[in-house]
Image (cartoon, rainbow, N blue to C red; front, side):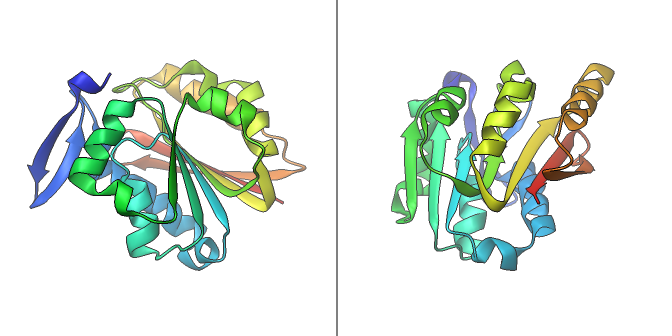
Length: 200
């Protein structure tokens, strides 16, 4: 996976890209920032523990710590140790004192973790494809179970086809609306749709 990633300069800043998509910084940072903005920086500042599934270069973590000035705990889960080496070398991820990085598969991690989180950010791609498990009801239920009271899921998805749009629609239809409110921020940077679930 990581052998296809490259670090380049864009508008005076380093970005991490795969062949077809931006992995960190660049447009991806703008997309997730929009989601965080929609949740509200003040709301985020009051949180105790944030889980990031899919760290890549760590741009969302930088938004949390540098822009929002989040001081609580951040746990980042990334399957690829090479990406974390890149993130540490180029983006100083290892200098963030309130961040713990776990090298693990996101699916395995959510099954094992004993913690509950105020915010779970799901941002997992293999180039432009998303693993199917992310949209399965089991995974949705499990991530929802890991939310603290009034917890929020921010799920970054990519919609490149009608099939993808349908997949997102099905995901939203399976949300238990008695327990959660669901909303979307469609067409962020053309192909991304953010799904936000909030525990009532």
